[in-house]
Length: 394
Image (cartoon, rainbow, N blue to C red; front, top):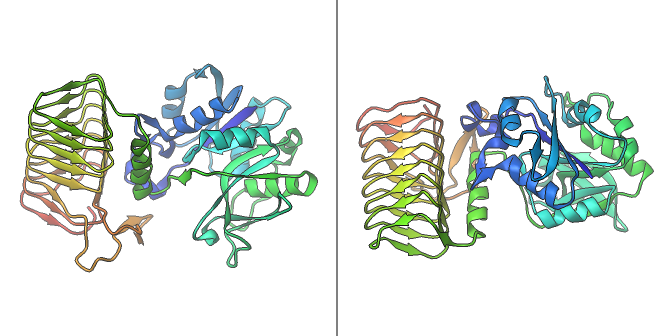
């Protein structure tokens, strides 16, 4: 099975994290999102991977190279993002004349479900969702997909298209679909033609996640660390206390008096402590520094970031090379108990979470004793003054 992985989009809903990293290359624990997708495809028997790249595509190409997990890799550059069918059409020259699969490079799939998908083509990955009007929605009869409609006002079911397809070989000739009302060439229009001509098997994905917004990236990392196998290979001071599901990678250092309550992953090159407290589905990426008296809870802290001492970070996503001055405190709860809102594409959107802290873009810096309100976004390179209280995006 040849697998096309769509990895060309800008990821505007994940800004500012995607200002310098394409969305498929954002980290979920020890590897980018797209690598989890490629792993699932390889495990399911893919004999060729074709990445459709665009925005900052060189980062994708540098990571995967010419071969990944023993599977040959090629690339197709989508210069303009004109929809999913257009993206796959861009990859057509890299495909042979056989059946092919298409996977979204910013979704997380259960590898066993991808294997089932590959074994039952033509097939469509589907999943039950709470708000189907936000998705492409499928109608299923007698174990076959009989219709799909994009973001319907009155959804016919709660079965959403999960962005995982296996198409018959002749579908390569269906990719020249006209532009939809949304101004895109839609892969669902290709699927509709396949449905008319072939029985299409719905494969329910038991674990699927569309990582489209910052809190979903945080949730994805939490999901993976909850399922990790605990192992300690780094240097841990005898007085440190590691509790539960904790991974300390080789090359990481845990200093005296540190308490870590899993699920937590401390990656290589990271230094924690002394006297720090790390808990609650937290990932500390490589070469992070967490200093004396710092508490970090349920957060993703990306590589090269520095939280040196006497600070609190809760339910937050910190980008690369962020520096929090001493005494920086993140608030993660509203007094009225309502869900925290975050800015997405210029609008305040509910995260659906009672607790959520901040999103800090790469290179953001806070002055000492800064207080950051819940749902605040710091742009790349943003700064705060010593003692400042920040309640709006910067």
